Structures are given as C-alpha cells and as structure tokens.
Image 1: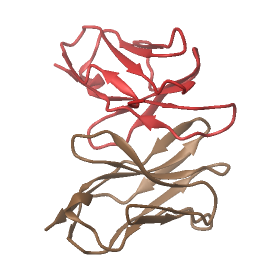
Image 2: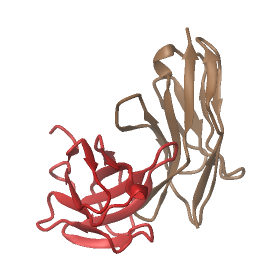
Image 3: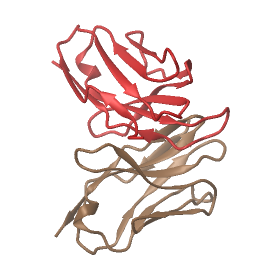
Image 4: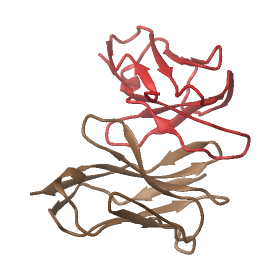
Length: 110
Length: 116
C-alpha cells in the first residue's frame, strides 16, 4: 500500500541555520504531496503542497519539490527561526484519504 | 466560517466506558474524515463520509467504533467499551469532494482521549 517515510527526529538547530527534512514515498498512481505542521498545543495545518511531478510548493520560507524520479519531497528552509519549532509531517493523498509519515520534531535554539 | 470544530477537546474516561465525540465541519464541505493520532506518530485514517454515506472504513476501526453523519452535516464517533489502547488524539477533517478527486482537507483541533 501507499506509504510515507520521513527523517526521524528530533532535529535541533540554531537560529538562522539551514533546514532539510527528508521525505520519501511509495504510491501507485500520481498522488498529491503535502507538508503539514503541528505547533505546540495547536491543530494540524497545511504548510505547503505539490500536485504533480516537478511542482514546487512554498510557504513561509519553506519549500519542497515533487521529485517523481526519486519519489521524494524534501522540506527545506534557508534560515530557520525559533518560531519554526514544531512537528512536521510529510503526507500524500491516497484515493480520498491522506497518509502521513510519523513526523519530525524540530527544535530551534536562539 | 470558523473552520472545523470538535467537542469535547479533552475526555478522560475509565476503561470499559463508552465515549462519543462530535465534529462540526466547514459548512459547505460535503466530505468529513476521522483520523487517530497516537503519541509520537502521524495521524492514521479511520473513516470518511460523503454527505451522509460512510464510503470507507479502515481496518483500524474495530467493531467497538462507530461513526455517523445522519444529516450530512455534523458527525459523531462513538467508542464502546473503551480500552487503554484507545487513548489518542481523534482528529476530524472536512473537504469538498467528488468521486475520484482529491480536495484539500481542513483539520479540526482534535479531541484528546485518555482511558484510565
């Protein structure tokens, strides 16, 4: 079945560091790909999405490119802030539902 | 519109008791989904409705779980004879939807269940 594998955490970085969180997927067909974020004490929010190969999703300085050849959707940000501390989930659409990875906890030190 | 709402936000119950959660979707959304998230894991799909019809159920949804959406608006998720393994965050999401098409899902804040 369809699945998502993402980098295990926790990931701890200093403010202004470069961030990469790796994500790879297995799917039949052509899913849409997502990154969701869960800030402490809050609900799941869609951070960015890409609906077809080579699309780049971007939001709040975060980017991810849909790479069909490597079945990857890595999340990147050039300069992280303390406010980016959260749990990040890579996900894909499978028929009518979303399949999530296990999440990566990110902590940013001032 | 204020988004997807869920009640209660927290529920503590004793093993063996029944619990019911409610989800109110975004008003114009015809699809409603339930997910479960255990500590340190990503959300896992449980079931979804298109209008009042329950179209898919995960194998995670044992016989003790039942979900309804009687008028195609709000939905309830009931767990009978709760077990400690049912302790989790139960998330509801809603979206527009047509057959074989994906539409963005909007998540509620969740109901955290603790079974003691």
